[in-house]
Image (cartoon, rainbow, N blue to C red):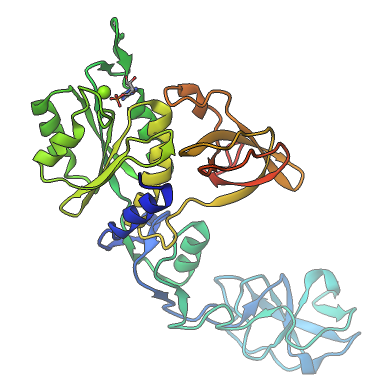
Length: 402
Ligand code: AMP
Ligand code: MG
């Protein structure tokens, strides 16, 4: 059976970033640049003051000098006249520095006497001045293609006057739940029925990572309904199904996909939970058939679908971030499949402490409660002792940190 590493490689080899499009900068947060971006102008555009203080020519002063103040320069209100030799200008942070001045002394470092200032300390030539072009020059490369735009990058591009960017769009993911036993959240389950909770699990997680979700409802375990709803899902950038991919009598998702032209890339991976996971394409459209058991649905979404989405979104490293953590308790090794254990993280000295969730069965909804990470335990691994350092796949930091 395929290993986790082989499966991940097949997924990434079969997916390319979505075609880039132009977006207004304010709508591009979280998206990945498709082209490099250069500055439209020098920043600062002119020399200006880095402090609230007084500007003068360094050569005109020495400690104890008394300089008459001839006017003021405020941010947005430059001083338009000449600053005569031997005099000073009151200047506030960000205000343009006149050509006759080259040095700024902070307000708190002078004594004001009527219309004059007395310099109490020695100053350095050019101090507290931000030079034109000091941050970047016109046409200077600011960000490379492949950069994910977060607040800092958005602020930088805004300062450089970039109001449109070419980015890979956020992927749109269609979710189809399958199963005759499923009812929607606002319905009362009858005997033998359960809520379509996977829809909400998947929707929430996909939105957390910036994807757009299209909900396709519940398909009954029968041909016509499955075919119709799957067909509708092909409008999205990626199609996810939950349930119906194992070997049961009613597991018909793969057959239905084949009727629509599905090219199977793999079915079944040596992992636990989530062994029956299915991956393939119709045309260029990636499709994941996730197993229906909630902890298996969540694990296969996390370890396979999220990297696929990051690839579609143009990220250069689509794999989940790994974090070295300390194990709270002993974990038994020796598994025949690579096991992924859900667990929580708590800050604890130099490392986070990883506590595996109490209930790890694939049918357990509770294994995900409070989970921040997945611990991969390789096939045939020795036992992992309490207190040892291990690498987990990080979903999020604890306590609501993004
Ligand atoms: P299946 O993979 O269709 O055989 O489903 C495996 C288990 O997952 C069964 O117990 C199903 O009832 C359950 N299951 C399937 N789909 C969902 C869903 N959308 N939400 C919650 N549980 C589900
Ligand atoms: Mg089913």
